[in-house]
Amino acid sequence: MKRIVVLVSGRGSNMQAIVQRCADDGWPAAVVAVLANRPDAQGLEFARQRGIATAVVDHKLFAAREEFDAALARAIDGFSPDLVVLAGFMRILGAAFVRHYEGRLLNIHPSLLPAFAGLHTHRRALAAGCKAVGASVHFVTPELDHGPIVIQSVVPVRPGDDEERLAARVLATEHIIYPLAVRWFVEDKLELAGDLVRQRDGASQVLM
Ligand code: NHR
Ligand code: GAR
Image (cartoon, rainbow, N blue to C red; front, side, top):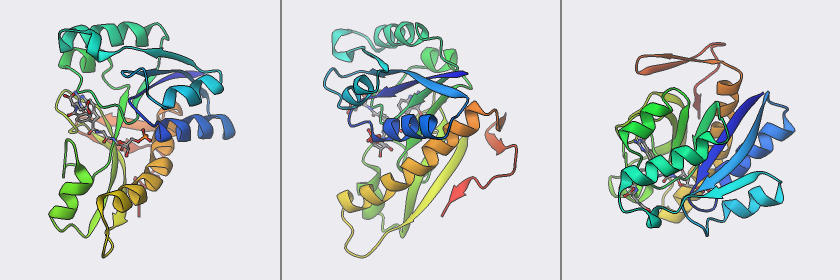
């Protein structure tokens, strides 16, 4: 049984999708804890209702980023995870933290990386006149949103789209590709070779 720890900052809908697929589809894994950097993260309530352990490491209580990172890592390691999943987690993590979880730390970013790393991706994609956008699941490396890509979804931009409508269309695909990526990880179907990720069965790594 692989042990998964999920980090959230807010709503936690990606976390919920992973918890649900894991339970419903009988993965050789369990989400053993949901951690947040904000005490008011709504995702925590869902976890509590499901009987999943929760913890808060409030970044506002730390003077330096490295101190927050260290406290977060201590909290995570208390659950002995095989995989750590960032699901709408909104704090940039330092190199020491990232290296500690190298090869077992995943993130979902709401853009077709390497385009639009960082924040406000949908707004920037609309401003750039993009006709297609999407989401990317990637292994986390010290450089923000630049790690090896596991799977991407491609979503059309439609006339009249605003940030909210586009975000909702992309989010619906996140709820498909993130559980799939986590499933591949816990079933040992992912092979990391330098900057590239191969799915061992040759399954499609793009959702169109
Ligand atoms: N850390 C590293 N080292 N590498 C990545 O790829 C990371 C990461 C931490 C978080 C998620 C993320 C995203 O997918 C993520 C990927 C927050 C910010 C940010 O600027 C940027 C990217 C991501 C998450 N955060 C502000 C900060 O100062 C705070 C913003 C806020 O609190 O609302 O940390 O895009
Ligand atoms: C998702 O769209 C996720 O891709 C994005 O925030 C949303 C979180 O939703 N992540 C980032 O923007 C990271 N910078 P959720 O809390 O309902 O999963």
